[in-house]
Amino acid sequence: MFSIEAIMSTDLITLPPTATLAEARTLMHTNRIHHLPIVEGDTLIGLITLTTVLAATDSFLRDPENRIHANEVLVKDVMVTDIATIDEHASLRQAALFIEKHQIGCLPIVTKGILRGIITDTDFVGVAINLLELTEETEPVDQEYA
Image 1: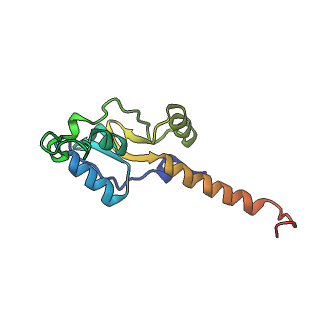
Image 2: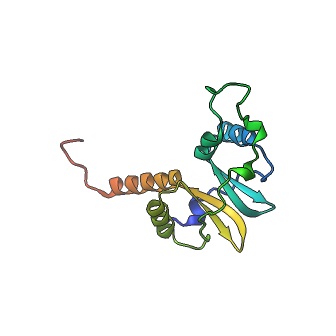
Image 3: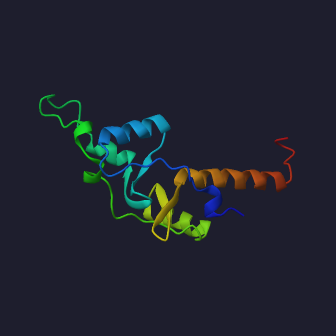
């Protein structure tokens, strides 16, 4: 069966707390991701999400002279610091239940204070697809649809 280690992303794209909101937005767009761990060394200190970036980005409808520019806002000023994490040895079921219960999009994997990976709701969709495919392979073929 699947484990957290088997499905978590370990090739992480991270930012330091001194990065700007513009840098975060560019990384998210370029890499098609919605969550960026904020780290000092290997230690997770915050998390920024696409929702956070969009909420902190000033509207283009505002007067240009009074607009807050994304290159002027530091990630550390808008990142979430109260982050739910899970150990890499926890069960996949525990992680899925936690994500569902708290309605969060990602769960960083932290072991002994070190960021080891991240697991997202999209990762669980992949697991569900694999399980559905396995189920379909073992079910008898319904002649009506064959």
